[in-house]
Length: 247
Image (cartoon, rainbow, N blue to C red; front, top):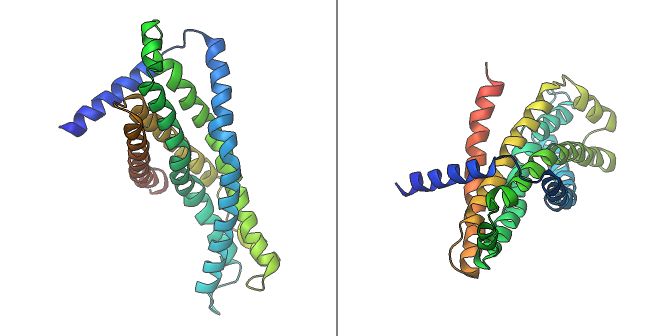
């Protein structure tokens, strides 16, 4: 029953959030600020992690498929498929749930315990729409950029392994990257990431917005938002993969 009650509160908050902004100029200004804070500031960690994960995937695949009956270019092919289908969308969003989700939850939680949200409500402002909607829109709009950078960086990481070691030649790695490429997979990963971005931002906003207590409860809300987002990302990943890739 408690889970149903929480879900009802979440739906109510989202319905309050998804209303037409009262002042579009303020909304656009807030959205641009959130794009920079939630998206652009996350770019460096996405690139850094993707390069190293791409390199690790290439090394592990190369070590585990050494066989005279498996062509060497398979290393590049498998690395590309893993990066495009799962890493750059699902795994990267799990990482961003920790960075972006905790940021949103702690910010809104601090505003709640310092009564800033109450002050907005007293002034007749729809605080959910004013505070949460720009975060939702900003993160959903910018997540495709993060995914594209992650895909590119992951493939570059594999290329660096081909360039600096003798595990696979650059020519065979490049051939594997191009072999049997399915453009649909990029759109699939971007669509998945946008769903995950909505989950991360909305769940973090819910936990932060409804904090009761002090600094300890703000920290707990931040932790709860990351855990809940991660579980739902994995659940939706399973469902969307089944719906969009299986026939």
